[in-house]
Image 1 (cartoon, rainbow, N blue to C red):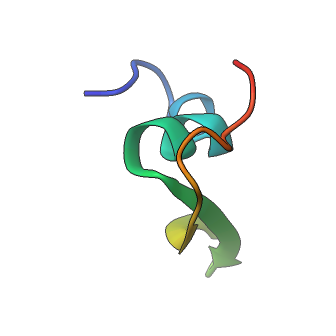
Image 2 (cartoon, rainbow, N blue to C red; image 1 turned 60 degrees about the horizontal axis):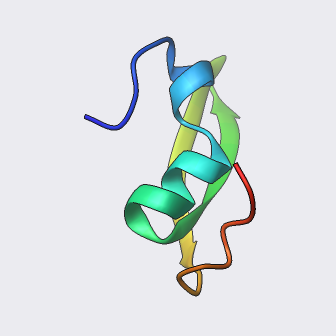
Length: 49
């Protein structure tokens, strides 16, 4: 587990970068938010926390 809270609170760009080394893509599908891994990022490039 990498976080505790609502999806909006936990599925952040910083969390995805830190845990999985990816950036995220977000879109709405039929009124629901869809979050998917988008592309790999270099480790250490996830920025400050």
